[in-house]
Each structure stands twice: as structure tokens, then as C-alpha cells.
Length: 288
Image: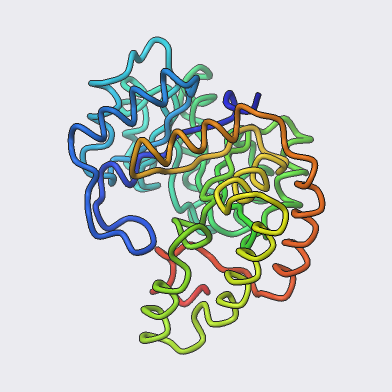
């Protein structure tokens, strides 16, 4: 079973706009049901951030902290201000989010000043493979990176980091919903801002649907299995409903179907024709 490698992300639980085509917040009852369903289904890792609205509070109020592993993300500025120890008092793991190459030296210096027990619980959340390499070289033992069918840039960096004993979290297997149900609408919106954004990925979206149907897999299963095949310890994913979570738990609880290797190879051939598509939160930075 792969459920032990799943980590539930909570951005959608705290930010209504998060995800492809998302315009609504799940609501209090659904959020509580999602968290309880995740715990009952065997998930013990939960990813959150101070920037995710009330997501941190939802985790600590609904779930038994002693039986869970909570990972929260903060700005590198917190390290520069010497406030990491205060955050670590309330959270098991803290990741410095969107750490750039310029931040690496100063952020590492801040963690060196912590006690060993605290420093071992601090990691980084990065976007670029060069940042991953620098952070691993410095000595961070926890790294979170984006990884999905259309963003495989970190694959080599993940393999090398694993060989050095680094714990790897691969996030966004569904590319914030673009790969499962939102590519076309998101691409249209993106191309209104910049005609080159996501245009080359539309063909992949259609080809993926045909490939999955031919091999008897859903888009959700294909995306999740691809991420679980990655050289990562944990896969961080988000949901907006209990139904979506139950589908993911069902996939993770069973063995891959015989058709999966052929499906995966075919999807990778299609994906090789598409430039890397990064997270939608980076579109405004021109990184797609």
C-alpha cells in the first residue's frame, strides 16, 4: 500500500481560489470531513502554511497531533529574523518556502544557530533544481519540490538527494488540478494574458485523456501513480472534497494495474513534446 507515502496538502482548505478553475471554498463541514477521512484512511502526513488562511488551525483543531506529522511552510524571512525556534515550538517540521539561491547562505546560517533537535526539523521548499542542489549541498535534510507529468525537472536532483539521505516531498501531482480537470479553462485564461502560456500543453491534455481511457485508468490514477513512482519519500496532494480524497485513497490502497507501465511510457512520450509547465502560482513570474 502507498497510503503511508501520501501527504495531504491543505492550501485548498484555506484558500478558495486555489487550483484550476477553483472559485469556491469547501466549507467548514466539508473541510472537517476531509481531514477526518484522511486520518481514518491512513494518512498521517499533512502539509500546510501560515499563508494558507485558516489551514494551520484546522489541522491542529481537528486532528490528533500526537498521531500525525505536521509540516508547515514559512517565509525565509522568518529565519533571517531569528524566529524559527518559536515556530518549531508548535510544529514538528518547518520548511522555508520559495527559498531562492540568494537566500540559501543566510537561511542556512540561521538554522546552524539552532539546537540539533530543532535544526533537523527544518527543511526547504523550492521550485528550481539548482536551488535543490544548493540546499542539499549545504546540508538540509528535508526538501520539497514540484513534480508531475508536465514538470519533471527535479527528477535527477531528487535521485541524488535521496542517495545522500535527504527526505524528499514531491508536491502537486495533479498540477493544481490542471492535469485532471482544468487544463482547457486554465489555458484559455492564461492565454488571454500571454499567448504562449500553456498553449503547447493543451494537446497533451487531450492525448492524456485518450491514453488513460485506452488503458483503463482515470486521470487521477495516472497522475498519482506517476508521482508515487518518483524517487520521493512522500507525495503531497490537495483535494477540495471528500469524494476526491476517497478516489485517491482507493488508488493508493491497491496495486498498480497491469496496464500502468504501458500507460506511463505512452504519457511520457507525449509529455516529452511539451516544455515544463510550472505551478499556476508562478505564471505571473513568466516561468511557464
